Structures are given as structure tokens and as C-alpha cells.
Length: 185
Image (cartoon, rainbow, N blue to C red):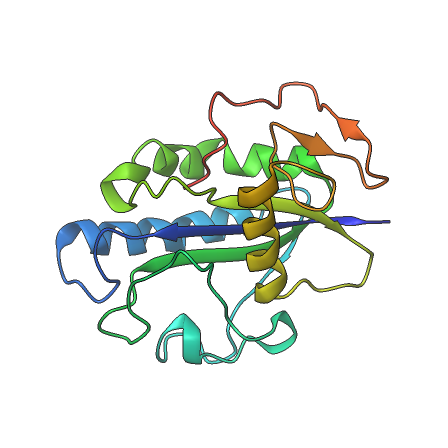
């Protein structure tokens, strides 16, 4: 049975190393959100670095999730002092559980504050696609699908919750899915 892959990417207003309360607040809320989402029904897995906490996303060992990659529009730093991004890559059983995890609870509260932390880039900041059972998507898969979504809009290859597709490629509409905005971050 296919699984839903979900990649999110946001450009931060300031580097992750910034010691200001706002940056610390984002990092602290992220830890709590990940804990809560990992307990959500339908959640299967997310990319986690084997050497968590050492360096930046760019120099961590992501195992089967592949080498870390970013969209072409990311033009900020790649060092521990300059990196200004947040990205996630996760697997879900279906659209509904992923949508519910993103748009309720702690994550919904964070979404309400996203522009305190993230720049408005004019680019999509999340993308969904289907993978076969047993397939682990890579960071590069997420980037290429996000860039495809940006260039071509929602399609079976890369889509949003609001304009989603079933695993067989037919357009689908899950009851209650259709936020006013497709912006996850």
C-alpha cells in the first residue's frame, strides 16, 4: 500500500545560531511539535540524522533519507553560523492523518506564528507525493518535487493538501481538507 511523503521547507528570518529569544522559541516549539506529531495516528517516520546536534543539516548523516538538499531559491548560509532554514521529510499512511497532524494542536499554533520566524518567499513550502510501500524518500526527492510544484502546480507527481491526488493519480478530495492557504510554514 502506498504511503504519503511530505517535505516541508522554510527560509528563516535569522540563522539557527542566532541567540535571540525568537530563534530559541522556534527551536523549542519544534522539539515539542516533533514529539507530538510522532505520536499522531498515521505517522510512520521522519528523517532524523544519526549524528543529531552536530553541525548543520548539510553535514549530518541522514542514512537512507539521503544527502541533505535544498531548493534552488535558498540563498542563505550553509554553515553552523549562517544556516537559516527549517526542513522536514516524513512518511504517513494517508492524506487525512498528515493533514490533521499539520493543521491541529501544537503545529497549528506554530503555523499561526510562522511569519514571526519564516520569510515570505513566494515559493511553496511543502509538497506531498506517494511512494510505494518500503520506499524511503530522500531529501533530493523532496526538493525536486517542491520545485516541480512551484513550476507546474499540483499534479500527481507533486501536490498540496488542497489540490491532492490519490495514489493512482486521480484527483481526490478528502472531507474537510482544503485550508484557505496551502502554506505549511
